[in-house]
Image (cartoon, rainbow, N blue to C red; front, side):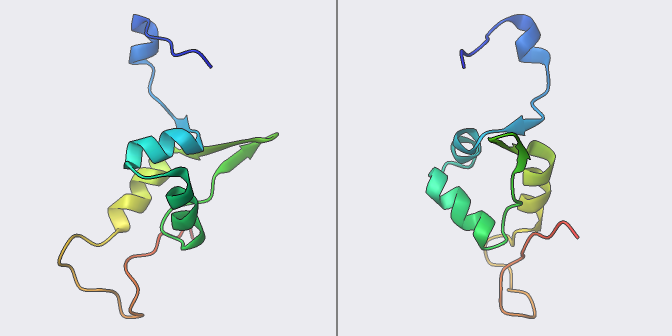
Length: 85
């Protein structure tokens, strides 16, 4: 897909991102993103046909639940785990 740098494209909010873009946004590899999903630290992607997309709002909500540096772990000994429920 070609990157659109038109003024309109720059004002349209991004609602969802591909695996590659999530990895870039988090400054990690796509493999690390998938590990975070499997560990429950990030939500699973939404699926349309064969395309997988992560909602930006869900990524943001998940990150807000992560512990900050120096914060104690939860009662179960695990850092904050993201859960849509």
